[in-house]
Length: 347
Image (cartoon, rainbow, N blue to C red; front, side, top):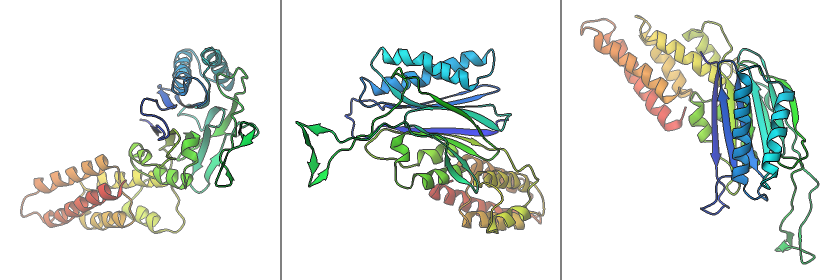
């Protein structure tokens, strides 16, 4: 059983013409023993930024796939792959910023690589966001037209901060490292069109707490003009204790939380799935569902629908004179309201 979720979003910037492609690219590889995530942002000044980013990602993933058939990947191997891809882009006059993560789901650490100003963040419940990479920027300058600085109503119109390293620039400045990646934590790869958006960290934190990571990632806002991409790898393991209605209610009502929101949602789904089949639990489950709804703790829609259908099946299987019939009916109605609210407010 997988102990992680993976999701991405990539959007073309509005400043591009309709015939131009998105200059960002995301790709990932899942094998039985390893997960590889890659994100690239083609340098806009090169001949074809879209081709550059796609080539960097897809070649890196393919090299990882072939290598993993024989042995595991280390930092030196990641750098070597990028060094092999570099001349392929350089010969075409293409360059791309690039970030990648390699993680074995059986381990509590991950390897990373970065070039340019794509970023990798780590998020942990209670510790917030930590930027793992450092942007490779050169010294900013103000371009001139005919020897004069272009201004807009008295203000400097353009300040350019060049990229100091990228795949395809023949410099081979690829930074690598190893970081702790513990249960419940997430790794976030993104381009500048994403992390420069207003309240970026807040929006990503909201997505990371969602039950349906794919849907939640799709709702993350981004800058309007630039191409924008984000790729999230989230661990879903951790907190191996047996949860009950009482323990989860205490966790929900506590000021200091003990588990990440997505882990809490996992435990809520488990308790509801088991509880709807147990006689005598109808009243406590109904109140628990109301509590979850009032705190906007909504399960992924498909999960919630599955629980609702199981509750309906139990209701219809009970004889009319069963002492539990009314209780199950109230539980089903409460679940229907919960599912409707979840679809409205988002899980």
